[in-house]
Every structure is written in C-alpha cells, then in structure tokens.
Length: 521
Image (cartoon, one colour):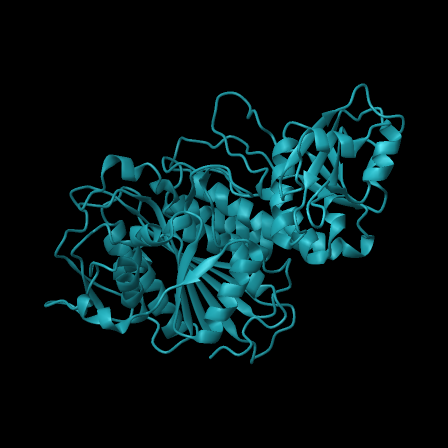
C-alpha cells in the first residue's frame, strides 16, 4: 500500500517521505525455524479456571531450542495471558538455528477472539518497533477471522507519522512472518492488508498539516489514488461548483485563499451489469476548520486539520474496494473546503442555496460540515440513482459528549442498513452506536427566511442528522458521525495517538462482504 503525498504546485511545503506499514508473509514452519528474523513471538493463553497460563503453537519447540522454561518465566512475571500482554526475553547471541535472534516475546491472546488477536497484533507491533523482522505464531491459535484481525492490528499498531528534520525514531518492523499459518490462508492476509492499509492511509491523510493539505491538494491525492486503484475520477473546481449550484460547498469555502473542490471516484466491480446496485459514500472534506466568523476557541482548533477525516475515510475505502472484490458499484464523493476567516467569509445570517434548490440559513458558520455534505447528498440522490447512501463526518461535538472517545455514533433511516453498519463496526473493531432520527426535534430546524436553520441547537448530533435527512429523501441512508473518535488521546489497542481515520475498516467490512445490500430497502 502506498499513499501519494506530493504537494500541490501552489505550495512550497513538501511532506517528508513517510514510513510504510510492515510487510507480511506466510510460513508453515514453526516460528523458531524461520531464518533471518531477530524476534520470535509465540502466544500465551489464560488457563481455564485460573492457575498457570498455557503456551500456544510454536512455544514448546522454542523452549527446547533455547533451553528455557518459558512457563516458569511467565509465572515469575505474573503473566495472565490477557490479550495484548507482552513478556519480553532478550536472547544473546542468538539461537542455534537462527544466529540473528535477539528477542523472544510471549504475547497474551486472551480468549483468542478476533478482537483479542487485533489487540495482540497491535501490542506486538509496538514491541518490535525498530526491529528488522519478527516471526510469530500468535495468529495460529485461531481461525481466518482472527488471522485477519491480527494482521490489521499489527499494521495499525505500527502507525507513525513524522515531519521532523531527523528520521523518525519509531519505525515499524520491516517484516512480519506469520508462522504456522497454512498457505491456503494467503487470501485472508491479502484482505487484511487491504483493510489495514485503508486505515493507515486514512490516518496519514487526516494527519497531514493544513499548511500543505488544502482542497486542491486533497483532490491531487484522489487523482493519484484513482490511478493506483483503477478508479474513475472527476474533480469540480470552484467555477464548475458555482455554475452547477453547489452553494453549500461554495459558501463554506469562499473565505479561504484556497478554493473548494468536489471529488468524485467511481468503482465498478469485475462482474457487473445494468442491475448492479450503486452505493454512494460521502465524506466531509473540511481541510481546516477555524469555525469561520463564528470562530472556535484557540485550543479547539488544534485538531482541526483532521476535520476532513470523513473524506479521508471515503478516499481510503474507495482505494481498497478492488482488493476486496466488492460486488456492488460504489461512488465516493468528497466535498472539500477550508472554513477560513477573511473579508469574504460566509456570515451568520447568510442564506445558501444547495444543489437541487433547497436553502439553508447560516446562523452558525461553525456548523459548516452539514452544508457541504448537503450538496453532495443532494447531488447523489438526484444524479446517481443510488440504492444506498452513507455519509461519514467528524460532524458534532455533541457526539463526543454523548459517547466519549472510544465509540462512534450513527443514524439510519433503514433498519436493515443500520444492522449491517452496526455488525460491520463490531467485526472490524470500529464500533458504532445507533442514535435515533427523532422527529420530535424537527421543528428546531425551522427558519423564517430559508428551508432550514443550519444550527438548530441541541440535541446537536440529532438535529444535525435531521438536517441532512432532508437531502436524501426516501433513499436508504446512514450518517456516521465520528467526531467522538476523530482523535485518539493515547495509544490504546490498534489506535495510535492523534487522528484515527475511523470508519474505513467498518465500511470495508460491510462492502467487502458477499451481499452487502441484502435486505436493505
């Protein structure tokens, strides 16, 4: 997986080359027999009914080879076998079969569920930063779903971004050998790399500083991504946006020195026909959000380079669809703008006319995300004949108040779609909690001069969703408000501190299934 990161020709800033995720390979050998690795990692399981822990595949051979009682070591360290628990044993100058070996890691896998293996993979990745290669039998304790989760966790637990004058300190391990895994599982590993790579790409895009990242730069990334992934791409500039009536995108972007864009990516499955359904994904692409004239407090702006997380998620999801052999057509739309402060900024009290004609009174310029999403949603429904529409956005602070920073929220007007999104979130490790489209708050959207007020007040997440619902009509639709999980405050499981790119794994879990639209509509 590569992420295009060349700067816009209009900018003097150039992003340094970024670290790549680890490479993964399968070996049916036991981990201690894999040559050319400086770390070997084996699984540890909790014993049933308490008591001493149990060693998993590959551990007996390793203990014999090194002449070490690994169970005694774990007992001395009071290891429990909990998922992600790592016990380290330095080895010098190496083992008889592998003179490069320098470190043995004993990794807890808990109940060996996919979530446990994802955590184990992430913690193993942290423990082997700056290493050349690790051979591990940790994913050999369970089946294909756990293998996929382990690879995704190991990829994302390795994530690092840097823009220092010196090389990054914590480079990911170069190579991970999945030992004791049958070669027939190679397709599982390829799928996991695609899903984990989408999460990685989304994090990179969301982390790029906004003195480089602007709407034009984001469009450039989409063009390069499309060439890499075999997608069709179309980009609207500010003139075309104005001509075709995208008043929300134009309004939000009019205060910035860098004009807005609308990005469209099209994926067509290998097997398709006239009846192949279409899913439209819409991602909020606010490349920086000052709040506009309704300006944010200074501290609240420090994370606003990632206010295009929804757009990053859509771009990254689109890039991985072919690798997952997604069976439906997918169109990705990213309305991209910078919400800036200037003499030409949108004012409180302005009225914008969205694509298709609906109008919004702007009573708060910091409720800008819904204005750009509304244009894209209206365009999708009017022009693309979608079977399903899903939007993703770091939209409301109210969602963070409701859920904290470990759960995303979503709304849906179709129960089958809601069930599919919820299941995909749980399976992927990006959990989403459904909120109600409570019509009892609909009257809060009323405006004396326009069709709706863009800042209807509390409950903020619900009124924002109700605002957007008017632009999708009766099309099955889900709205993912991931403002609660846009940033990780600390390293936790597969999450690394900073922008998360939350949503790409959940969408791919859903769209990469055999029948993602079964029962919907």
